[in-house]
Image (tube, rainbow, N blue to C red; front, side):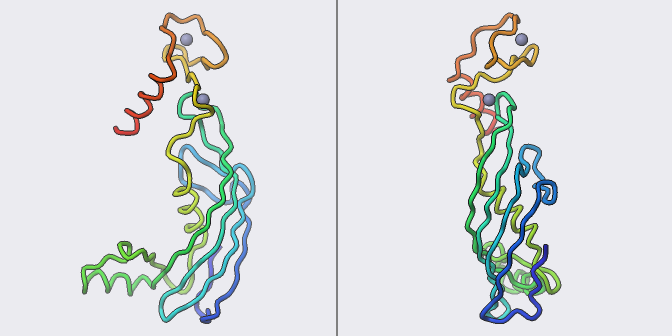
Length: 175
Ligand SMILES: [Zn+2]
Ligand SMILES: [Zn+2]
């Protein structure tokens, strides 16, 4: 969905939209919508700047970092983003060596703001970096891939201590 800003007044206009799962790609290998995502808010203008303020409610499905089991993450994100026209952002960068992004400003092209992009970004920002189905998740057998939470798999391997698994996760994050 796009928010038309051409005739947007200072008082602003309310918007509301619901994304069915599948209607909004998160562009992430590990996360997807598990239920409808709703966004509601208000867009208003101050000079050339457009402020978009609102709230997203969504259910996201991510995979456990260790055993890949699906985990449901309910999200509630409040956001407030200021947009300036693309050409103004480009001019600002050339003249004052100030990047629009550094000022906490986003840019929009034409006369509409891409709400899908905004919602996607806000959801990805709000997701935790680590997802574990539970702290003591034993993960998958490195040899046969069996889920070690479900019991032994018969492979020769030392018992995996969950604390070592946690260290391995940390190492993975640093790489
Ligand atoms: Zn797990
Ligand atoms: Zn095994």
